[in-house]
Image (tube, rainbow, N blue to C red; front, side, top):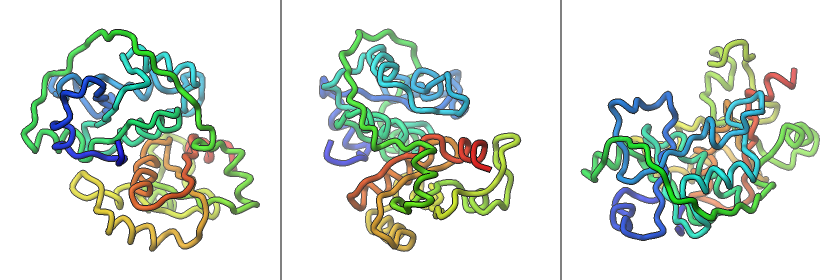
Length: 267
């Protein structure tokens, strides 16, 4: 795919491609299998369990190359797969999956702009959520380590100032006006970071136009630095990263531990 996002019409027009794999990245708290539908043939991409490092004390931690490969193969994903990922909230968890595949060296992946709500609104076909078995895929990962940043990098950046940290949480959370949703997690922000709430990149459940996104980033990104995106636990940071990808080139990475890690380890 040439673009990081595709429309529902694009997906419908390309549905017969034998290499197409549609992934449902909806999180368990976003859906009830008893009453929710999915795009026909969609495969469940379980961020919380199958695609997170369960040994980590922090949520949604990036999995090992081996774990990612094996979990992809179990879903029938191959290195030749052309992947479209969606979620049930429109644009929420799907950009995280897009970024994970990019960081694992897979090029042919895009987010369905507007997700399941847009697909349904356009009148395209759905089905009940079904459990399926898949023929094993041959997916192989090539980890791009520069796309994922650790707390050590972020701490060093306090001195080097080589990267701009962009926090995707709400302005109230960034400015300590409301408590963090995770119990006992302190409020605040990473020193020298700026705030672009992920909601500011979206309009009616889809990404804003390139023109609007360009203005948004021009207002907030004044220096020509590499970008590192953060949020609460690494999910919504990927929304703002993808929005940035739509409007300009340059190095972009995710601080995987995000505020959950920083608030606990840096006092």
